[in-house]
Image (cartoon, rainbow, N blue to C red; front, top):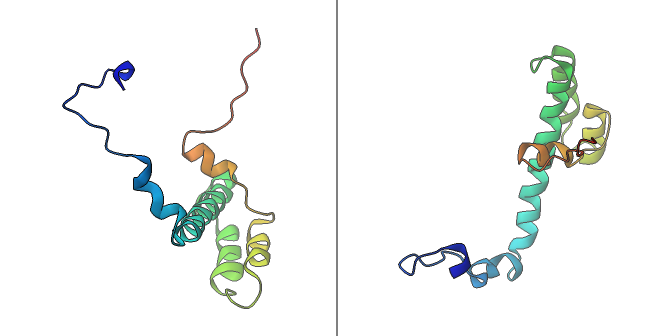
Length: 107
């Protein structure tokens, strides 16, 4: 850690054993569910942003019809596709987290 310039008085906070609960004991499945919900959230909000009006009444009506009112009546992926018009993608979440893929400029 010397190469990072840490002074001896400041010890690293996280060691690999601090994350053992993720991989042992079933937490990983729960974490996957949290991450999947973030993907749906980012992708769904992007649908509104793409309309140019985050309060778009037509898209809001589709969200209400296919997600809020129809939950449990059909498979969740089918309902989401009916609302969004496509499967969710991870790209909106990656962009929100600062990992959007940018092509290097040629020149």
